[in-house]
Structures are given as structure tokens and as C-alpha cells.
Image 1: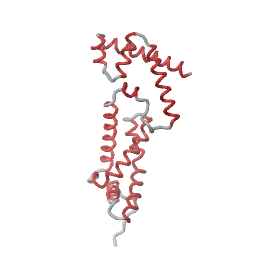
Image 2: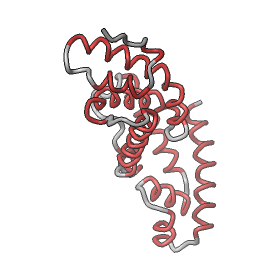
Image 3: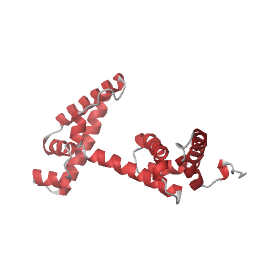
Image 4: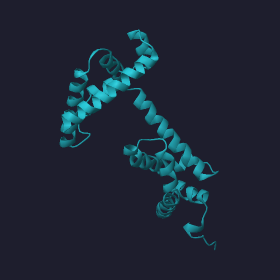
Length: 194
């Protein structure tokens, strides 16, 4: 009879193989969950630090959980041996890239017009977000001249090169207008929210 080492003494790769066997039989399912918990305990702090350098802190915990969900669901077909941490890094990297693509596929102006998606948040949160968007629109409306044009074009998703071309201004002037607009908007929003 072969003795099995405790999970804490097994390598990451052996634990990943145990997780990959999760659907083979009911006895393996419990061991797979325990192996997964051990991998989570070992690599969770490292993964959080990797993600913290790549995602906004408000999205950090969600990204962390999504990566671990993918590890669990893809262990059977995705892990093909090798170093577990390398595989974990690739899953995290791909998730960050997917999020980045979704964000860049949707210009900021479209985001500003879509206050929230139905049913995605509590009613109070949606009302607060709608109020914040209204304050921001009002403050942008108070900006004058070129600064307002630069902000609106940026919110539509235009690059500074496109803005410079459309408004016939230098890149330096566009950056300065954006900086001035940001300062004016910050002050205006602070007054409006006070």
C-alpha cells in the first residue's frame, strides 16, 4: 500500500494534478478541494502582488477571485505539468489582458452615457452614480472653449494625436488644456459635492 504525503509536503505541481482530477470520482473531489485550498494558501499573497501591479486597487479582489476560479475550472484541461506558478501567472496575465481589451473597446464617452447596467448594483449605488455623472456633466459644461473640447474628445475615446489634428493645436497645448481642465473640474466637482 502506497502512503500519500500530507498536502503541505507535496509540490505545487502534485497539488495541481490533484486539483485536475476533481471530476474523476467523488473521493478525488474532496482531495481536489483540499489541494486547491493548499495552492490558494501558498500562492494567494504572491498572486495579489502580481495583480496589484497591473489592475486598479478597486478591481484587485475581483481579479484575484476570477483567476482562482479559472484555476479551479481549467485545472483538468489547462495544467499540463511544469511549474504551477508559471501557469498561474499566465492565467492572471490573460485575465488582465482580457479586462484591458474590454475597457479599451468601450470609449470613455460611451461609459459616461451608460450610467450603470440594469441590475448590476443596488438602487442606492445607481442613484449615487447617476448623481455623480450629472455633476460631472454639469462641471464639464461650465468649462469654456478649447479645454471643454479637449475633455469631451478624450471622453469620446480620442487620442491626443486625433485631438490635436481635429482642433489644429500642438500636442503640448492639448496636454496643457487637459491639465487645466482637470484642475478646474476637480475644483468644480469638489464644490458641487460639498
